[in-house]
Image (tube, rainbow, N blue to C red):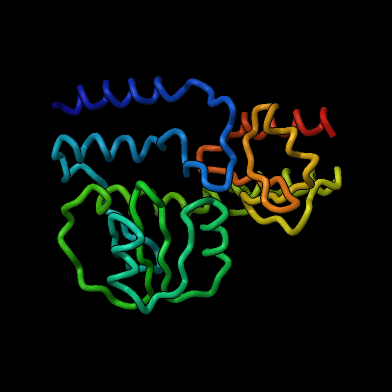
Length: 225
């Protein structure tokens, strides 16, 4: 397959992903993303066509890393690393606010990455997660998402303010994780699937949660509460 045909396939996949999700899955064990980020799609297509030299080589600022197929393999190889984070926006936010010299972040189907300040022996890149995961992690740790004007910084400011104003927070929230009063469980029938945990209706935002989804959620909540 040529780069021209890869571009055509890339455009097809992007078009297929335009269909809105209904309901929007914000449950505790929902997928990390219901649509793939364009950077992942592009890298996967290049890998599938063995155009490995076209896949960007990533250096993560301040971190050495090693990629694994899953959490089991990562934990077996680095049993001394106790700091493990889920690869959700909520989990990455906790990682960024933690003071850790080494950590494991599990991105489920995309793979699991070990991040460390210590030197690592370089290994040959052979598997798809070795190529795709660094690209994805570089994005998930970026200022584009977490800077003062980053997506998750601004999304959290808006949702925290809204839930606080309407007295909906059942306990302390964090970026991408919102434990709401059980009254909010009516959101399940209004297009926002959450999880009932004890006395809370918990919303956990995936990476693909968009500005349009945020606007819709805010609109529904203001109408209903």
